[in-house]
Image (cartoon, rainbow, N blue to C red):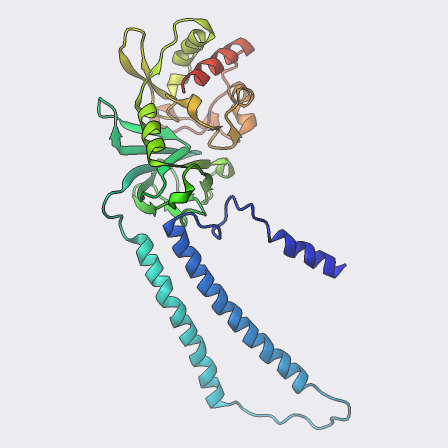
Length: 354
């Protein structure tokens, strides 16, 4: 039975499905971390083997045997041996320290040359992503939520801060953790491998930040160069204001309720582009093009979206009763008590905004 249990545990560790593993590097920076891990692991493994071998040898060689009556000779110590086993750990730690510090300095070094800048803002409990170098005709930066698009094979530098409490940005297979702290900026470089174009990688907040911390997730899409340019152009465009059908009715509900916290860039039938709403929650201009809702906790389907609008707190733990709109603090989306028809109309509108 012991062999069966140990065998099952061993086989469980052989899974190739590594959605959030630092041992599945998919960027230049993650590969640096992985190489450091390999070095430390094999040094540690070597120390383990030597120490355990010496321990087993001592247990077997110097065990008490039948007929042994004399007590072992008592000695104060062996100065030479103590010096040796003090020097060996110092040498081992020095060997580990050099590549560790080198890797840390490399990862902290600012991006150079041509790179993409992305501003990352942590909120309770969602992620805001802004691209300050990708602007629309009025000079507004591309802004989205919970889904980060990066060009594969190109270095991106994330400038991160928080709107409320400390969060931690973590995409294990792309980079190490980096704290997201209110009142200051931390930086993180990510250079996805060229072969990752088309991949989607999940990330999450790794610093406890309140009620919905475990549901503060995000998705990173690694695009080819042309795909990233196409996505950027689509995101800069305004979403149309519907004039008929359930989408038009949904737009009336949207402007009456949703714009209290959410913003959207819309184009009227006359061709006028306006930004409506308050930028307290996620920007919803192209909500229909996103693959997830609730900061990555559910796929963006008609059923999930209707469930979210009907009773958000049943899908994700939140405290909307603590919202302070005057202070710009949002702790969750409230239940507005909409009926099934109103919910269906809002769903139709949001799905239309690709």
